[in-house]
Image (cartoon, rainbow, N blue to C red; front, side, top):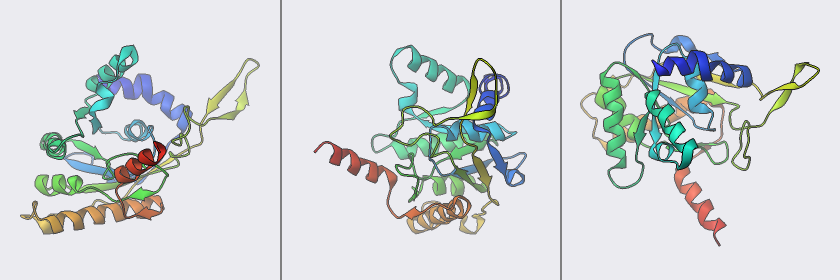
Length: 245
């Protein structure tokens, strides 16, 4: 219930007012049944804007840090995420990937939509990075279609060096103030990808890599980003290491 209160009463209208998201290809998202929506990840706004344009409920696998932030703001964030049905996943340690897959399969087993970012983290520079095979493992194990999704324009809303979202004034002004808005963004959904040809091979590493690369390529075609054949997490780790020198 709280998910729909957030979407239609509290957060959704504000997001649509400020970001003006334009949805393309919504006809590719099934009206019922389990499916994975796999997208690029450019901004903190991505997991907020995608649900705002979908009629169906969608569940994200959220990193555990979002649920564990200290202070009042942290507790409020954790409460909102929990009540909105988002799932906390610990991304550290050896079993992190297995935990994420298990949680994701639980969502799909209920016939729901599951959102996944194959890159595993936000892009550090707006480019599309190599996908991790967890998305393929879930798609093959659950035998569900994968809907590629591209967020376009969200990286510019808040680049890594910015603290606050980028905004610009609208044309309509009042004597007291100007209502701020950020630049409009597009959310593009592509045709469902069917991997039934790989049925019975969910643990084959070569198949998992091939399926993941096919999903990544579909996202790339929608987004028009530059592709980097490296994991985004490795690039971020290198940047952090370089910054400490």
